Length: 587
Image (cartoon, rainbow, N blue to C red; front, top):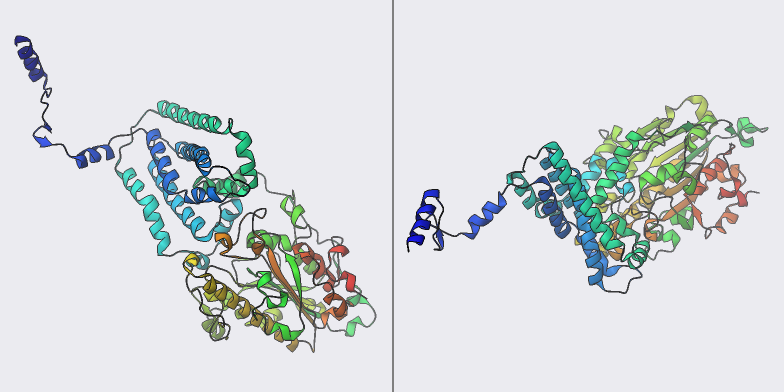
């Protein structure tokens, strides 16, 4: 008894609570209070990074988790795959977050990564895309009007669901201020633990995991937000530490051929050639190529030639356009150590007038050294009032004021010949409903998908709205041919159309374009290539009937450079006869 009394007195003297009742300090235990204390409990930066990594793995990596049951060439246990990839995903996200666990400024960076992860997941889930370097490059090349078309309330909801709660926690949780060296030691320790975890997972199961990853390359681009951060590093950071490629000109030796210099050429009509660079023109949706719907009612009447087996250099504009104007071809272009000038430079060096008119997000460097213009410059004209809205114009706007634009070229060049390049908006998504119009009578397939949240549309409505954009393109190309015919009295005229890449329309849950070429479906690579010979083909002795017999031949963007040089009868050391689509049909 005396011992207990002494203990009680000692406890009272030190202020220690000895009561075993369910109350403390007169207040009942509250789970909410306990949660609030945990919510605001000071944490080391590395602990915060680990908590955020767990959150990202659980909430921002649904594209990865939903992909695992659908992997190609794998018939084993999905649960085993989850057990393998979950620690790898956790280690990858933790490494990224730990890398920015600095003594100061870490919270804004973490919040930025959370928002980035939410945005990336939205686009991966909504459009079935993956995030690699080329996709990040596309993002930085996107203009304001294209960006607006991609944003909608569902994106905001995704940001709130994925980033809202952890950002709120970050704003309130105190981070323990360790000294620099102690913080560095903790961070390095966490990173080493992550690497050890990766090794512990991969090494024992390498024989089983390696073929899974090798057969499903998409897995390399879905860990979120690591995929986006690596893409940004490749696009924006690596160039700061690397030397730019040297530049070499290929224009030397370019000259006009015999059709300009032979006897009687002085009285011959100069060529006027239009090269149309289409956007998102999927080859298998052209009636000219056997598509069941009548998407080409006007071109069908004009005697055009359409190649059924045509393929792009890339799956996005940034990759395809510079490649198709290069003399190198796809493989050499992608691995080039030197930058060269391009087809337009060679045509201009030969003495021709060259003009680029853009209705897209720029020429990707192709038109830097030749006269160029944009439909945006005429948005305040009568044509602009009719054809433009919200920073975008229908492709008919490319023809507005085209005579005046051509007339501004140097007269001595116009006397020799002119090449006009029209860069279309084409069928650019996801706002396909803006690529046709009721006034042009091209909204013939109904109902249309009238939102940029493509997954919310039925497959029928999505295909309808895309096919209407192809039908509008048919009308625009026919109008361009009509414009050329107006000049046929004074010029030898012709037109060649090539789309830059194709488009996915929900097949296998994939939308839009831009997947890495090696894993992209054919829908993103099969393009339309259409030629209207006009009177220009006869100038270089091309037999149209012979060409009609070659339309099943496989052609690619590699052919364009050499085909245009051949059509325009421009001599160059870079010209390769075997890549000229018309060479075998010259008399």
